[in-house]
Structure formats: structure tokens, C-alpha cells
Amino acid sequence: AQKVTQAQTEISVVEKEDVTLDCVYETRDTTYYLFWYKQPPSGELVFLIRRNSFDEQNEISGRYSWNFQKSTSSFNFTITASQVVDSAVYFCALITGSNTGKLIFGQGTTLQVKP
Amino acid sequence: GAGVSQSPSNKVTEKGKDVELRCDPISGHTALYWYRQSLGQGLEFLIYFQGNSAPDKSGLPSDRFSAERTGGSVSTLTIQRTQQEDSAVYLCASSLGVPGAYEQYFGPGTRLTVT
Image (cartoon, rainbow over all chains, first blue to last red; front, side, top):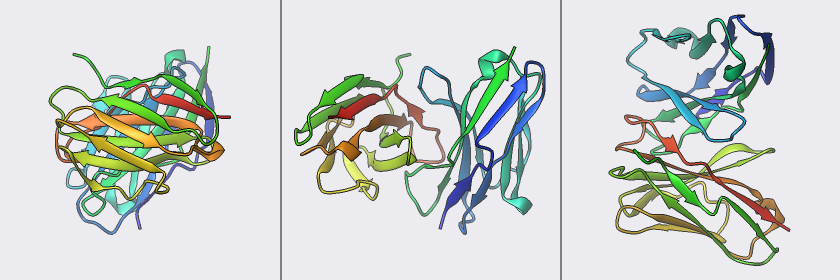
């Protein structure tokens, strides 16, 4: 079975703090892809990053960074120096070779950044 | 370029009526997906199209739900004899090619309310 768990339901930080959103996934497939999406209050899901299971290199994009660790089946997302505009619901998702087009989403983490 | 568009943005219908939801994918995207988002169930996969074929319909909740795609472009999701539990935001996404290898881009959604 494939599953994505985002244990943090809600996180509240003050602007400029760093924050890490956790994502743990389960799959028996050796080929899979992991994603992060952002859903701001406007509602539209915005793609942030895609990783395949063969590439464990961490990635940094501006204030965003992702840590992929196969040993712990985790794909965590860190926002450095958070800003009010980062307030949104963040979803981690998984596609495997055996589940065709189906993105399996975690329950989402609501991040509130206070000024 | 233009993103995924969906219509209508909001739909209120009476229980028992049929509804049609439309999705226009990003031009050139061969894969198209339908999901729904509700408070209780999170983000759920419904169906995936590659071209005009649907290799994975496993997420359709009942035979009241059907979808088609024509000309490898526009897709319509039809819900017959709507029930109150069908109330949700229906999201469409498209991707350039094979799921996983390409990220899915989401539209703004159609909010369906069944009264």
C-alpha cells in the first residue's frame, strides 16, 4: 500500500523564523516520485518540487529547501526566514510505478506565518 | 502561457440533479486528471486520462460518476443524481506526459454544493 503522512496538522511561526514541514511516505515500489504543493488561501494548488526515488540530492530554491532521505522514507520541506506570504496549506504527494496517474496526497500541513 | 481552466467556478445544484464539470488542460499536455477535495476526505484521486483513454478510473466513487475526454484536450466530469456527499471542490490537473516523470498542474477547481 502507498501512503503519505504529514503528522503536523497546523504550524504557527513568527515571520523570519525557519520552519520545517515533515513528510513520511510508504511504498514498496523502487521507482516513485515525490512532490510538494502549496495551496494558498486563494485555493489553487501550486507545484513546488518533484523528486524521483533515484535522486537523493537535496535541493535549494531561494528560501525553500528539501531534504529527501530514503533511509527514513522522508521528504521534508524547510522554509528559511518565513514570510507572511508563505501562509498556506502545504501538501506532500507520491506517485509510484504501480499506481499509474494517481497522486497520493498527505493530509496537508497548515502553516500560519504571523507578522 | 494559459494554465488549466475549469468551469463553472461554482455550482449549486439540488439533490438528484445531474451536473457537468468542464476542464481545459494546458495546451500540449497529454495527461489529464480529476481529483476532489473535501474537508473530511482531503485530496482524492478520481480518474486519469492519457489522450482520450482512461487507464485508471479507480477513484470514481460510484457509477453515478463518469468522465470523458475528447480530442485529447477538454474533459467533462459528469455526476448523475447528485447527493449531498458529492459536495466538494473538484480539481482538474494536467501534465506534459507520463505521470510522475512530469508534474501535474492544477486548475482553480469547481466548488460543487448539493442542497
